[in-house]
Amino acid sequence: MKKKIFFALLALAMLAMPSMAKSQIYAKLNALYACVGIINPQLEFVVGPHSSISIDPMFSPHKTIRWGDRNDIHARFGIFQTEYRFYINREVRGFYVSANAGMQAFDLTRPFIFQNNKLITFEPGYGKGWGMMVGLGIGYSHTFKERWVVDAFFAFNRMWSRYNDYLANGEINLFPAHQHEPKFPDPYNGSAEWLPSKIGVSIGYKIFDPAFKGKSAKQRRVEKLLSE
Image (cartoon, rainbow, N blue to C red; front, side, top):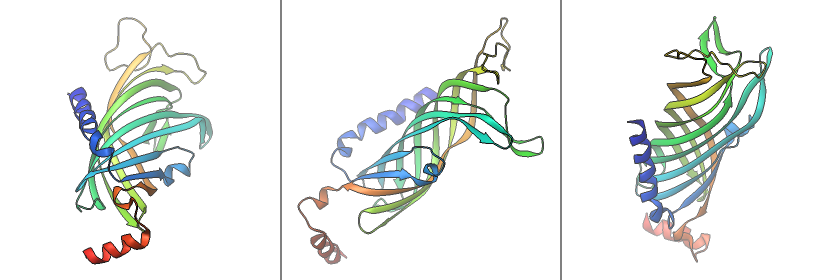
């Protein structure tokens, strides 16, 4: 089922490619992630009234980070997502809902929420592996000064991961906590869970618009006033 959903969303993005080639294009950067050193550029292609397709790569270059009294939290990962957005406003601005699909590779220390009377704790070791995800999101996009945009968003995904477990000293863990314990030592593990997949506030700029071709900003303002 998960593969069918993933490939259905991927097919939707591919079908939109002809429209993307001649559509409005916004280049964005997630300012919230940039504050913590996570690189998250985005390209959004307006493919019709109410609709857009967003290409959303994300990369954390941090091998380890400090959290509380620990300085060995692994936090390196890469994610590539494709997202379809449906805007309530036909001019592709304001509130929207979205559906996305993506792939990931990671070297992460697993976090736990609300354990041992603490909001966030981490497992002693870490995992290296890959996975894929599908999910839904909401957001709000505000356009100003004709070309600039601010985009706030949140998405929640079902994630399927496959990985090897490692102990804190870097040795591979041959006895991780499997859901179904194998007969022989096996470091290969897997999980499936619902998790927030992205949250942020992006600042963007319209880098292409067919309606702008050969027209000055003054001409565009006059045309906008006449159409209102």
